Amino acid sequence: MRYLRLSFLLFVFLYSCKTSGTEKIFANDCRATAIPCELDRLYTHPYEYNNKEIEIQGYYKWDSERSALYPNNSFSGRNAIWVDFSGSDSLKNDKGDLFNDSVSNFKNMTGRKIRITGLYKSGSSGHLGEYNGSIAEICRLEIYY
Figure (cartoon, rainbow, N blue to C red):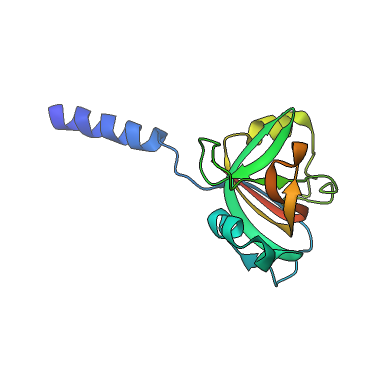
């Protein structure tokens, strides 16, 4: 009887744990030529990727003067890039729902790991030019939990 209770508790515990995965994917017509890239590499070789479509992942942070992708969820370090969602209103999920670039969506994405495909521009970007480049013309957004 004791093993039965332990087995039941273990089952309930394991069933209640979430596995990580993609929560939402929004996309439109991305070119097949997007270059997979990591933030550390982008920081050390920004001109190699300038004006190219890249695919990059990191942790998103949004507040009143920040829309940035960081390599870790402590949101520190100089190798963050600015994320420009203007013009992303054509992104749709598999249900046909449009990505809504509202404050509530950005707040919900803060702290989450995301993967973005878009056009990278090297150089000072974002609020007060404090970011080492930006990604814009976003054609794919994956939000993980």
